[in-house]
Image (tube, rainbow, N blue to C red):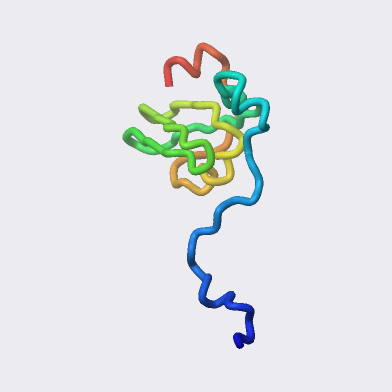
Length: 102
């Protein structure tokens, strides 16, 4: 007789989810809905000397800062991580013309 109801034996083994992330109606009625587009963004400017590429850990978005002064709007979910990247600083959000050249 185990003292922990066999929990130690199951430790580290994958556990199947007990709920469905897709509603039952969506499973049979056609293509799944796409992800929602970025709803809120945070502006970042690169102040380093070369170029910089960063992969957002939450959205898996590739952010490419091509040169010093390049500005990009970053998904709000990735912003805390990018705040810790050397040579990146938070700024006001970029205008559409600036975002294309960065």
